[in-house]
Image (cartoon, rainbow, N blue to C red; front, side):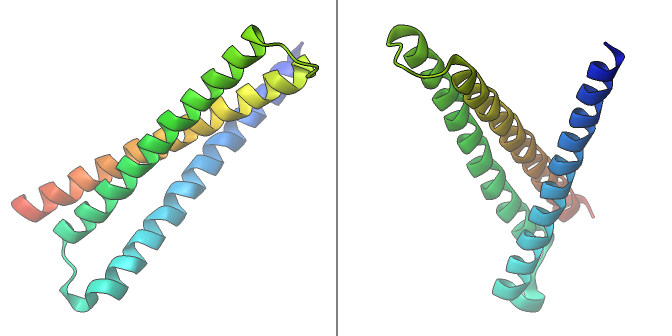
Length: 123
């Protein structure tokens, strides 16, 4: 029983590291794109716009992924086919994890966008 709990904790830590790594990579990509497009005229409002747009897109993708997981679940209940139940359960789990990851990254981008707006207007 302890080994199973330790494995779950390790997977949870790995998932959190993956989310953190994805956020860091996305931050760098957005900053590089802003500097390439606007050169030395970049300010915090431009960063805010970029982060808000990316965050909103990621939230929409997270919602679509969650909806797709729900559709897979309903299809497997209402119209059972010759599918393996374990495969359907794994697919639902993967889609739910992807939805959670996209939503977390989207929320973080929107929060970063709000921080840049505060920096623009108050500093």
